[in-house]
Image (cartoon, rainbow, N blue to C red):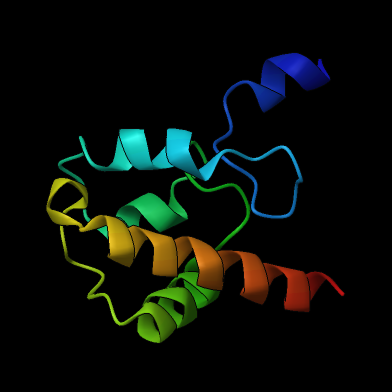
Length: 91
């Protein structure tokens, strides 16, 4: 049951085996906004709406920016803030 459910989830910023590059490959092809993608558990596992707002604010990326229009350095900032904010919230 775990593996079936886990296979439908995206990259988990709290796991050591997460793969942000695999996530980037999906995001850079997406027509959804980055705000929607951060909330989509099949992309980012964990963040909800409050985290989404804080992550994107700290990364300096507007939530309406489309995934395929995102620059790699913007994604890297988003991932970095996602990891740090979720770790802080978990601890």
